[in-house]
Image 1 (spheres, one colour):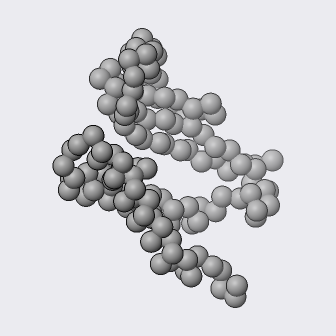
Image 2 (spheres, rainbow, N blue to C red):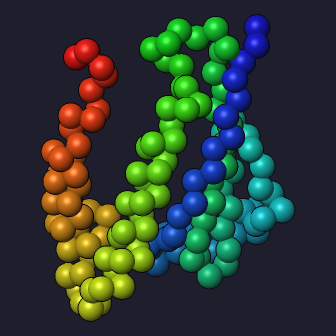
Length: 136
């Protein structure tokens, strides 16, 4: 039986770590260096000692004869990836750059911010007709 293999990379930045979380991560930093980076079924977490950024790599396997309801179509993921990249760029490069840092800034333009959520609702409502399949 053949299978499809997808290699997934998730990159991010550590935020709001408390002292206990920071201590655990620093304690095990040598087990999570760049030399241990690999695509595995369980996943591999890579990060540096200053705890700024992290990378998670994993392998997702799928049977080649899976039915259409469970098949990940290679062309079908690109619109979602482009939307996600645009969303991140808008939040991190535009929203945060235009915001004076205060204690309430993340509540306004962070990933879960009020303005971010309101913008997503507007975009979804404005484009909902485009999401339907032809003939529906």
